[in-house]
Length: 85
Image (cartoon, rainbow, N blue to C red):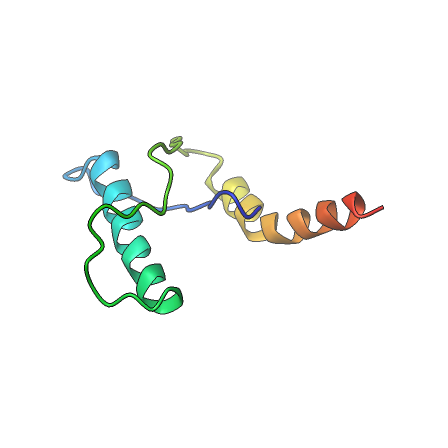
């Protein structure tokens, strides 16, 4: 879906989830602004991502989560096609 992103990552114990999510959101927002909005610097006061995020741990179900993420775009397109009629 165009309003959220699925990411499966392993975080070393020395980093907190909030540190990693903040880093990913910050660096990706800068990259998107540079590549698609023509901005080179001065990103102060800009916001691209929502403030919140959802995190869940994965144990035995890691392979199921990987498959879900892998096929999510296809499923989103299929559902979008159904809504056209």
